[in-house]
Image 1 (cartoon, rainbow, N blue to C red):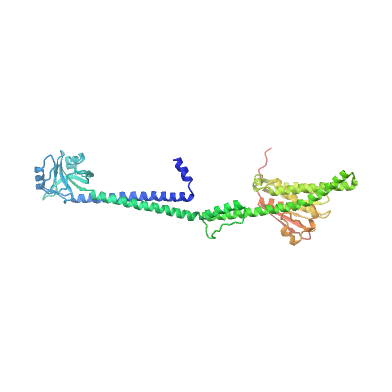
Image 2: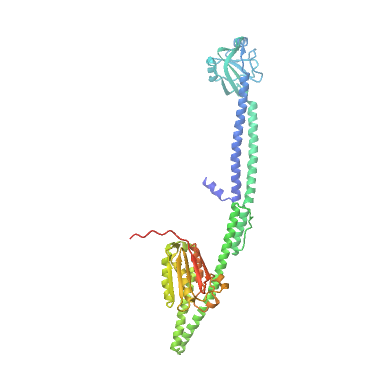
Amino acid sequence: MNKAVRRFRSLPIRSRLALLVAAAVAFGVAAVSVTCWFIVQGKLIQQIDEDLKATSRPVSSQSVANLLADCTTTPRPSDDRGPGSADYYVQVISATGGTCVFTNSVGTVRVTGADTAIARNAGQGIERLHDGTDTDGNPVRVLTSPLLIASPAGPQLYPGHALLIATPLKDTDKTLNDLALLLLLVSGIGVVGAGAAGLAVARAGLRPVDKLTEAVEHVARTEDLTIRIPVEDDSEDEVARLSRSFNSMTASLASSHDLQQQLIADAGHELRTPLTSLRTNIELLTRSEETGRPLPEADRKALLASVKAQVTELAALIGDLQELSRSEGQRGERIQVIALQDTVEAALRRARLRGPELTLTADLEPWFVRAEPAAMERAIVNILDNAVKFSPEGGTVEVRLTDGVLTVRDHGPGIPADELPHVFDRFWRSPSARALPGSGLGLSIVARTVRQSGGEVTLTRAENGGTLVTVRLPGAPTPPPELP
């Protein structure tokens, strides 16, 4: 059994579908054919039984007397004709098991104990229909009933005897055999046709799957993610949904691949400048040591400070790249309900250390969100860093949190209107800010973190100058207080 199942599973899907369709049709046709055969058999037997009952009628007393007078223990034809025609078996059965056959009987039927019992209990008026055989072994349908004598006063019971009338089943059996052969032939044709139809339907239905397989093999062989499977717009079946899902997947992979290539190219471009400057400074320091010509102390300190700043910038850039490269699954494992006002407070403490000459005001109302704590704090720090970086000396940065809306407003030069659509792009930096430290990834990280928390972030020009950053985050249920 297990071997047959394994062999079936090893077949192609088309063959399996064709076999399953053929098996289902075979089962259905077999059930219908068997049911039809038994119904026809029952109807034919019912008709025969009705004919036998119609043939059974009272016999004249003289015919019975003559029949019984000529009858011996060995059945033999009598000169008297009984009920029925020449196509029936007609005989009288005695309570002792004796049989007397009428002249018009086509033969003699073998008497059973049940037939003798009806003759013995003739007064009870019981009759019996059953299958039997004649003395030659031919099948017959038998009606055994109490023997009735015709009289002017009506049918009279003849005690101790029964009348047996039977009809051959040869023609009925031939009809049933012909019907069985016809049903078998039709069933075979139906099963073969169903198998062929199933195979054709399987081929037509799996044609899109073949295209999908070819597309997958093409992608695996060439890494070409631009391939698409044509799908009819009004088609909503499973194969169409699978094709649309494949097209969406390849489009997402292509977009991800393009973004990855762009990220690598942009990262390489951004890394080249600090690395070149760092290498130049280190070469100057190394050459000074090798030639024995020490640099002036002021120049040496300036070079070391530049090296330190460039290393810090590289570390920040690498950290930003790692943050952007983290997958959604890695972030989802760390998401929890956090108090946004506490996160903003922590970010403000760090921002005040980076801009001690500035005034950072805060008006924070309680608000709870679902987010990754470290990522959300980093995003808010990035927003505040930009505000500190572009604020004039002695300026003010205003931070407000109300009903899940966090706003950070500085009083710096602001961003030109034509540059606003690009502020959240990776590695994009305003031409006026390229001389300042930074990687151009800060706002990209902000946008990604806020989006993953179900919110949105916008950056606009503030009234009377400066920049206004607005972060909207959906609220989360307040966590229960911690037990002491």
